[in-house]
Image (cartoon, rainbow, N blue to C red; front, top):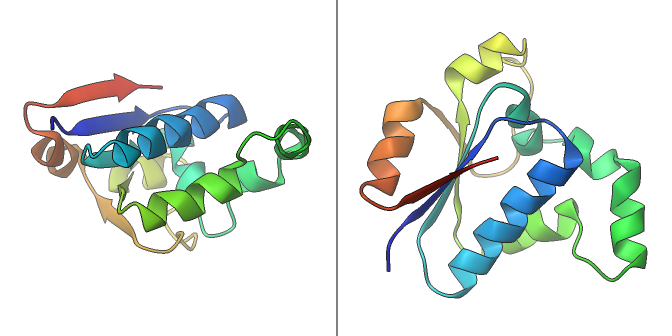
Length: 123
């Protein structure tokens, strides 16, 4: 199957959550998936992700919708590759912030190489 690359630029909960929804769904049907977070989107891939503390997490849980925390666990189980942009970390003054488990620090060339001729979605 064609690889899927998800380029996350936004640090907001809705886009971060949906990036994980898309990634886990694609991986569940056998597509290789790479999430590349840059600029404000880097916050999704921090060790103590601020998005997991967002009030929307409780709303989603009460509605029976997978939360960011649940989706991150699923992403790891499904083997989704997660890359945080080195330049994006610097741009957001996050270069010293601890990253979530198995997150790589790399650049856009690494992301494009991983996706190859596959599909890229930007959020």
